Image (tube, rainbow over all chains, first blue to last red; front, side, top):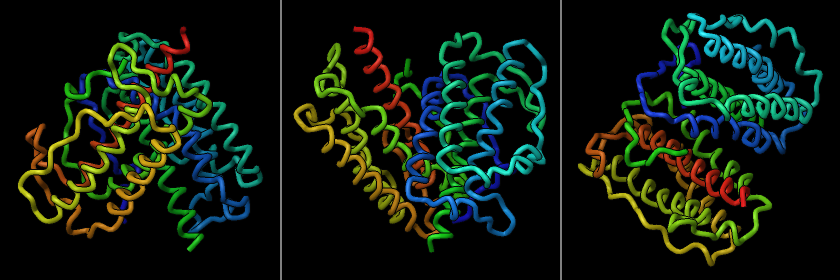
Length: 172
Length: 167
């Protein structure tokens, strides 16, 4: 099944209704979804790179690596900045982290911890804060707090699908 | 607090290349629900507060919606003009052990995902009219719609659990 590449994704941030509670729950669910997906995957299999793309561990590590960016962008919005801080589109942090040397269970534990800290930060946000916005540097579109975290939830799904595909490919 | 589902403004017209992500979300709902109800006593899971659905009824409702979704996928593929109507009041799942409610949901959900994965590429964007929304919807749109609907009920379950934790 063909799938849209992350940088080709189109986002619709025109909605006005407050769906932040649903978005928070999606974010909260990501660690459990990852745990479930990887429960029968060995460390060896999770290290394998196919066509020089990231391994399963590197995909998980990437989610961990990006959490500070997501939180930093929240800070940007709440501080009233006009632009969100830029991401490193080359993903140097993940490429240099050598996530493959770590155990899957440690990566999953760390992802759960960083995500849990994010949820703790965003759950108490007020309606006004949810609707504050700043410009996304790559998409060149204003992004409200709600849009920003919808983007994060979609990014989670992107990597969950990548991991799913890696598992299926290697098991077959 | 979750906004009323029938008030949600929803846009459709998703490309078929988005289906893998929607299926991932649909599959993930199973473990998300299991994590929420783990260790929660049966009284809480069965309790209807202010006449609203219990946690078991919210889960049972998702299982019933999946039965309709399964039918709707077939209808879109054969080119039906209008899809079957939705289900509203769930059965009384309060007397069911939670394991059976979860098993019913999991069975229906995995069956739908299997069906989605078996749809031919050329059938993925075949539209039929959604009877309540009065908009055309394809199997890809339906997968997104149901993933959003899942999230709505997961938030409802959170709200019930939060009420009990305050008592």
